[in-house]
Amino acid sequence: MDSVKKYGTEDSVNWRTNTMRYKAIIFDLDGTLLDTLDDLAAAANQALAAMGQPGHPVANYRYFVGDGLRTLMARILPEPLQSRAGIETAMALFEKEYATSWHQRSAPYPGITDLLDQLTAAGWPMSILSNKPHDFTRICVQRLLPHWAFAPLLGQRPGVPKKPDPAAVFEIAAFLDCQPDDILYVGDTAVDMQTASAAGMDAVGVLWGFRTREELQAAGARYLISRPDQLLPLLTY
Image (tube, rainbow, N blue to C red; front, top):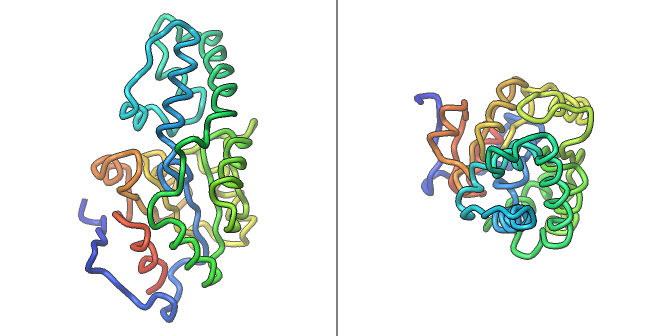
């Protein structure tokens, strides 16, 4: 896709002294700021085991996650159990397991803490929007990203459509007193790119996350980056 810009190791800019291209940043959480895949996979496989079903390889969860808990359970269950009752049973089992084990291996990706330090020092408003259930989203951020302010910090909530519906993005924009096209959206899946597009925002696809370059390009990524520090040049002219 010709419109996609790739920022490699050779790119650098004195970004603090340049004119701002954007006024705020929205981050996805899982696969963007935090590497949570091992803990998500372990809890999901435990839920399957409790239902007498085989688990899946961790790598498969790169494609199972990203669209909310209910969709995750539907994807991992065998077809005979993909009923409403089966999915709700799996959800309850997952939530019980994940509530105690979510932090065993989850951690910020390399370079994320330095990026957040620089953004905070420069005064950039930062928000998080995740399809992870809201309570889990808050717990993960409070435990694993405790030194940085994200306002608002939103997970999937009852009554609010999940991504890629842009409803929550518009809520964040209103909170930040920004127009949507003043905000840069950063994520790692097609859902994130589609969310940004639906809201009229530029999207950054991160290549260290759960999905591929090809998926991000096809879903409308405006930029692709392979390291967290490559976000900084995109913020200013």
